[in-house]
Structures are given as structure tokens and as C-alpha cells.
Image (cartoon, rainbow, N blue to C red; front, side, top):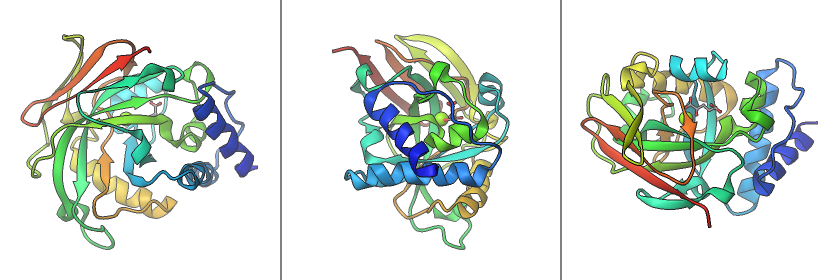
Length: 246
Ligand code: OOG
Ligand code: MG
């Protein structure tokens, strides 16, 4: 059951074709097992895990998607797009983009306080692309689908500083389309990291030195098309990407 669900999701992503929602019931552990199987297919093709991402850490995201529980997904090297680079839109089914902040772990978390393990922070953008029709899903559906992870961009890393309440803006071709604050991320992005430690232990996600962690979008996501999109986090700088149709 879970193998075939992970194969359907993997094929949907590779074939850039949406599938019907899965009928998973309410078992979140089973949904995370499908996510692990899905990542295993990617690893088997030569991709490498580079970190993880949180989802639904802000009210704006929860309300936009009708989901109210925080979730974790996994990031591979194939999802990373260089800052200020172009990305081909044909890779995605119905992509959306959202502003994020990213943390980098300087060492394995193990039993340590995660705040002590973070060695850098950066502005970031995440491109999400549900593999489900109409971008609609239940909580288990989106967990199985690796939390809609599709691509991400990291701006310049800098030493960790106070990120409690930094204004966040997202601009599309120079026009502001979303604005918020890092305080929208569970009240404080470091609190999101503490929640991540619990989720990661429960659902078998490693938190290793060198890993990148996306803390979750502070604002709603917007459709990603043939535009230049910038995330601007005051005090941290920007991350940007251009969507291109070749
Ligand atoms: C799920 C991913 C949520 C975030 O930052 O909250 C997420 C989705 O919205 O499709 O990445
Ligand atoms: Mg996100």
C-alpha cells in the first residue's frame, strides 16, 4: 500500500502530472512512512538529503490551505536552486512560491538544544508544488507528498542573530505581493525549531550538521510564473529566483 502510494507520488512529480488525493485515513505515522519511501526513490536515483522543512508554522499558511498542524518534509540537493538563478517552470505542475527564513546546523542535534546547533541564518524562498489535483489535500495527503516540497533558494548565509520579529516581504517583478514578519512563524522561528526536534524524533527525520532547515513561510504563498520573485527579510537581505518558460 505505502510503496504504491509513494510510487504514484514519485511518478506525479517526475511526470509533472497531478494525481487524485490518496485515501489515507488519519494515520500520520503511515503518511510519514510514505514520505520516507518517496524520498528513498529519490535517493536511489542519486539525490542527496540536504535538510528539512517545516510546514504550516504560520497562521497565514494554515488559513490558506485549511490545515492546522505543523508538518515536516525533506529537502534534497536536486531541489536547491542557486540564489538569483532561473528555474524552468516546466518542472512543476502548479507551482506557488513563499518567503521563508532558513537555518543551518553547524553540528548534529542529537540530544543538544537545537538553538545551540544553529550556526547560520539566511533569507530564503520555497517553491511548493502539490502533486495533488487543484493543490488540495488532507493533512496525511500533504505529509505523504513530502509537504509539497519542490524547490528552494537560499540567500547569503550569515551568523545567527535575533530573528524574533523581522519584517518579511515578497516581491513579484518589483511589486510587493505579500508582507509579514518572522514573528508569524509560531511566534518565534526558534520556537519552530524546537517543535521540529519533537517532530523529527517522532517521525524519524535526521537533524545533522550541515543541514538546511526551512522554518515555514511567514505569509501565504502566491502562484509562481514567468516572473522574478524576491524574498526580502529585513536585516538578513534577499533571496531571489526567476521563473522561465523555455
Ligand atoms: C504545504 C507546505 C507548507 C509552509 O511553509 O508552510 C509549507 C503546502 O502549502 O502545500 O511549506
Ligand atoms: Mg514552505
